[in-house]
Image (cartoon, rainbow, N blue to C red; front, side):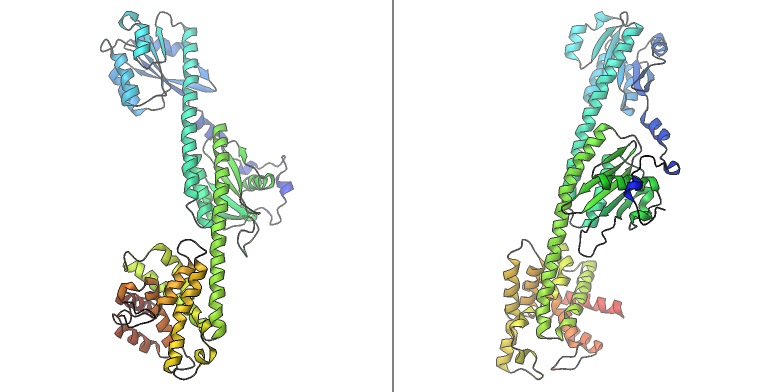
Length: 528
């Protein structure tokens, strides 16, 4: 365990040794350094024997050569159909038929779509396949007669073919890598929460590097009000999955902590053989480092792709943080507006938050039961609870002598009181027009204007009926009335829970949406 008072200077000391924590590089390098594969296709056994003898100790770029034998075009086709990493084919022309080799060339390029494998036509009967005609008509990469292909020329031919294959594979990997970077970074822009974004970062880098080991993402910086600025593991996967939520100092892998601290201190990506510590930064002082344990040594192409991904991820990170700050700003505005009604009427405060809680439970129950299809969506599910506390914000415009009156209101006073629905909606709509989309304020405006409407059209202020009333307002109407009935007010005593439930049951289909009453009763039943 690393001490809580981490000293980055000490952890960055190049002389630190962590023998117990060192990855098993030998095994991973052995996996990565697989031999080049060459397919020899010839119906003469001696050709296979001589080829193996000449190339028995062949190596290129630290990789040996695995020679696979096929004695006919059809046998070669079966091998190629199952084995896609063959780099070079030494191919005879005349085998089971006079053009078996040339037929196989067309099958490889057209049917298999294999453009990378290097095909060297090697024939003992050049007259059966004239060089100029074959080079023009068939997608081969070299043409040799068996008589001219000495041991030295065979070696040179294979090296040239492997270089070409290596470069083609690298180009293809680079193209696919760029596609994956673009896909990954695009998907990140769709995420709206920091936690989901950081988990997405980890998943995307793992996919980009084909990483199958473990990964950790630590974040340091004051992203949100009240957050802990100390580096914390915000996401973890693989063998490190149980580290999620721990502080950096609590990670029981000193070498990994060293790499993470190094990336934080230097503000750049650190590539170390078969693992890396990837740094990215958002606006302000929000910094993150992802430690990725790969299953192979990372290539320069891997480095470039990760660098590019990090640049895109930093922009997406800014976007996520901006979205969260905007959401927090909206929530703060909602609380500020709701507090106006509470200031005018002290009994309203607790009522607002009880309505919020019950509203959230009702809409969750409706979602579970599949109610209000076509009206209920993720935005409403997420925002209706907080928006519900704005339902009586219009009471700020009601005179105190009416709002706080202990007895019944006369007709004139009642008309004044009823204006709070329209006034609240006007206040919230004016504010919501400065924002795009469905926000807490726009949904709050729906609720403020519609929560006194009735299912049968006898409510106010517009006398709407049924589903003409916004779903948000229909839900809050049930929650609001239930809490109002069971709460003591200046003009009445609190009803019992059972009395209030029975009152609402009787008015399903008259005052309230029947489906919403059913959901409400389900919530009440769960509460016991």
